[in-house]
Length: 558
Ligand code: NOJ
Image 1 (cartoon, rainbow, N blue to C red):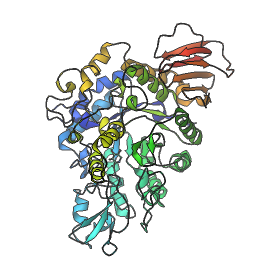
Image 2: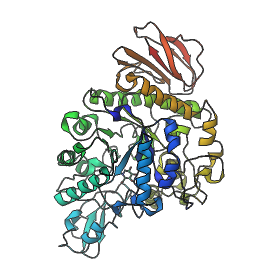
Image 3: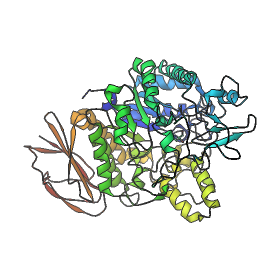
Image 4: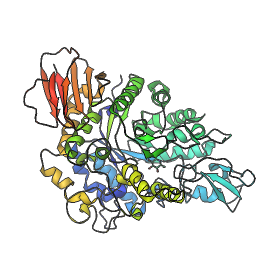
């Protein structure tokens, strides 16, 4: 297996709007990030992924870009960006930017020109179609509710938008579009950034006939999915992008790819194919979605969790690479979803972190995760700012779904769970801003905040710090092969990692109930050294012991 810095590193994701406001307008900004770089350095991460910071009308908080080469005014200036990059590189931190090129904002100048007339040179930058008589061009649904077609009065045609109607899809069939994207990518890479996280990159090639879709048995990605995801030319485009841009720099790339299988993933990340380094897979994130999709929340099982993770590990082993995450700006907080955000908040957060940081792949930490921030429950729907939540709420309310049912789904799955401001201390607005924040702070900030985590040597923060340090000290954590123990066990997740003559044993109790762990496999070792645990472990007898609620132990076997 090839050794690389992005396999050995740990990524920290910043959602700039909610990270730290330095200017006092209630919105996070680049100078706020600069203020906190030493904090991130102390945590030990070495790669920062910044969610979009480009000019945007913020219909979807920056994922609707109106100018790819400008910094969003609320976030600062181009000089602030240059300073941020310099300050990061001085500290040995790498910067990964978000690349959002499935769509632009409808306020991007390309779209302004495109909608002017059918013969405008920019017309073909987007996907325009006539209606079918009185009807829409096809029946595709948008990810943000409603149709994915919007009628434009001026030229009496519809344009495609898989996301909001302010996010028209780019037409990647047009070579001019592709070259514009590649030039823009070079613009930032030449400034010295270290890679890209590519937004819904498996959606850039659509089946040209744009056929009607059918509702899938399990409705996770809408009825257009078979014709928009992993389309006929997506690999050709990515190989072209790699040839013309990516291969010229020492960078990392991670593709966001909803709804793909490990088999399809290989086509994107197989090292011989020269496309991307790794992907965000969503099979795990869909584990608690029922037949009705994301908002149809169902219970998840540890056995399914283990099977998904093992399947992905096995499929990409020695061929590609996995990314490891349990939350991000689109997902609920991991401790609320997979752990226990009440009595066992710190223990379960540490246990989940142990999993992410000892499985094979590059770990991603989402801001606030390192202090075990939790989901939020706003009573008033207007306090939610996310377009996905707002559109879903309107659509389902009109269909007669009661408000309390909808709120329950939002509490479990809404994206704003992750977007409340980072809780820095117990001062007003959690120390995020002196002004009223753009979205409310979680009311638990006086208890859960960075300042108090830094004062407590047993905090979740220091546990993450230790896990990251261990990764740097033991190659087995990065490169070791995985062997699962007790695959069918319903509450224990246990596995070994092996690399050269290093071996690790990881034992995790995913639940509150105490449970006996018995090592059934004969592992060869002379000494077992406890590397990390979220409880006091008195003796080092590790073959047979009682796991306490959410207990995690990692042993190095010699
Ligand atoms: C995925 C991003 O992570 C999400 O936040 C965004 O709304 C959509 N793609 C559209 O860009």
